[in-house]
Image (cartoon, rainbow, N blue to C red; front, side):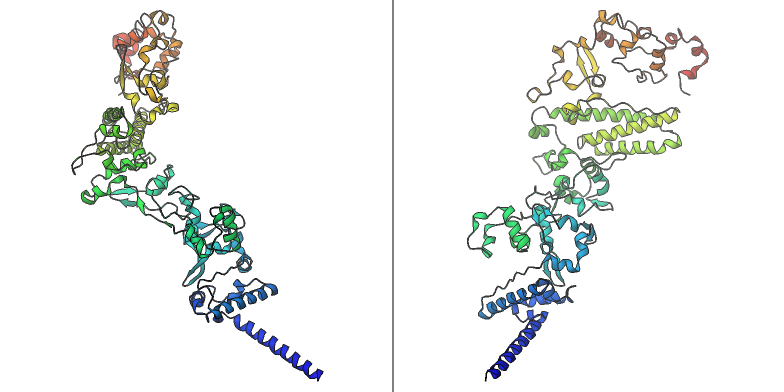
Length: 580
């Protein structure tokens, strides 16, 4: 009898073991997962994906016997909840990183791969260490369930991580890392635009691409209710919540964070698209100058007003729908009293410089062949500034750079014509330490009246800062106090002038002074090297005060004057002083 019961027990155990084994093998099949109706979309997604040959348990069970048994016990619990109707229609399943790396081990050490054919991505920078203080897992990014893309990259995780909690419109990392500049030129309302050239000059993407995100990506409190009933005392403690929810529980970022979108939602409105909708691209030159493009030989340089998002109507103010010429008073409404003078100052400087450059271009119209490119570039830059018609107001810094470039090109052409080496003009010290040149562009070309004398800013800026004569503090900004100072510190009186030697004059006056006459060549450095005293040509320079002497003007060399030292050259060697 006992033996009979033993046989029955062993038989029952064998049958039970076989049934358990058969049940386990049956539930290993992905088709078993689809037997629950709410799992059908997940099954279809898997079946059409690149993981279709990988069974569910290879990812969702931990590898090894213990992991297999644990997975089956968890499955048994899920089945019981399904039978009693207590199941969750949005199941959450964790996939171990070790399971992923058993097939994709090379991905963990892959430095750079290309995503979506253009975005360089590094797994090593995202996996294996803390990113923004969070230990990421494989399913942090590979969690999207899209038909045909089981475990594809969830781009919402990228946007949430790179944009949430940083300045609006900014990103964790620069725009280049994902986008890079478009290679080809594009046309924006009649303006030919080259991203690569523009960005190389240091201009940021957000200068034009404003509001590149929609949404905040924050975590509303009500999101917590989907899992928790209470426990809100830890809300906001990201250093505690992220390790639990992301690293341990493998939750998706979008499970907690609100939606955040990224794209070209809005371009800078500084080019007045409302005007362009009726008038077309009639102001393309003005727009090019405003955004700091269109010229040659100068890096792109957007106007500060454009960078700040000021549209055309910000300065071209009118009470009627008809656009008007911008008035200096428009500057005062934003910047305060006194700024209206800057607009007139800029226009005076640009007008004067354009007049000089036009005259110089006419003089070198017959340039050497090797200088043709320099001549044509200068001509095109000058033409661009003239077509703008604002005389620098649309972008004074860019226009000033184009004028300097044109002047340099003309000087190079002259040097080639005269078969001499080109010597670049030394840049003026324009008070950069005080930021004066940021607004007072071209002031070196403007004259001023002091002590009954007309003087040049250019001569003073070579050896002095702006604060030598002007107040630079905000409360007294722009006030000139030079009248209260003793100008004889730089301009000695007659008794001090009588004691000066030629070398003393060179402390302020450079030896290589520009030509004083357009008809004759007069190299100062040659005469100074021969120890010829200044008063030999500059009569009475040591007999009167420096300011008084400047008032009478500089003498122009004439034949009779030069004949005292060069009698033979005057009569027989004209080319020594004159061009052909």
